[in-house]
Length: 358
Image 1 (cartoon, helix red, strand yellow):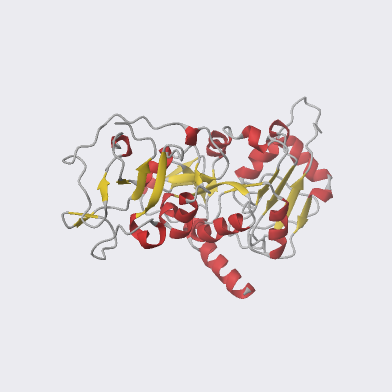
Image 2: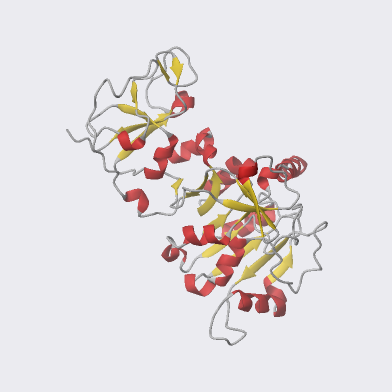
């Protein structure tokens, strides 16, 4: 079991798509919406080397502003860039860390006093705290795998988990959070919506999208990271960045956004909204075109989830695996997806309007 677990993790980490670091500006842009929900809470960043992670930097620098009870962060010893990309500071209690043999370690912060007496609480105070107090940092016994027993014990302490997990392990990562009934705010690829294991939680209203899900997010990567597409890479002040397409925030923390009603202005017209050949549902190619007066099932693009209000709409299922996630039988002909005049339509979320207006 342990051998298989480590092998899978090494494979995920060896895949370059898992080796990148979230920019502080993107973290700040999203986290500003949840500040009150973090007050008095224990936050765990379980995929975050403090030498690299801007998640750690954000929560450490804002420990008192957010009113955190405790901040815990753990790193993975197999990281090929540990200690080489964003060296924040040396930590007493840990041996000298070199990029090639970085050991897994944990940091626990319970209080951030104004140690340097400059009247402000910031990352410099955290730096001095770690330099002078060996009790807040220690090596892990294992390699820092989020599925290891010691990391699970730390997870049990946490109220909220916030990190950028390996995308190749996203299904397993979310399943663990659900198993231990944890609140979370994490980054993931838009394609994760299409995973039946993830979509199940979305349909059950146990997982939804955060606020900042548009635009381009640039992630810091090692300088030897191979990016074949020129438009997806840039180097700024000697630091290499990679744009990964649409990256979303996944959470089960409540947001005001998900209670905002989507304004509907169009009415149903059979010519404008064709029915699928193999589903008892109509095609709505843009969520802004959802008809206000249609009572039946509608197929909408996955971008709809960014506007999804559970009080306004019901998610019926997902066109790609409806036999597992849909109510009733909408399939006809055994096709793998929705079709119109024999032509397959790209994957659709199947919804029903709860507040039909005639």
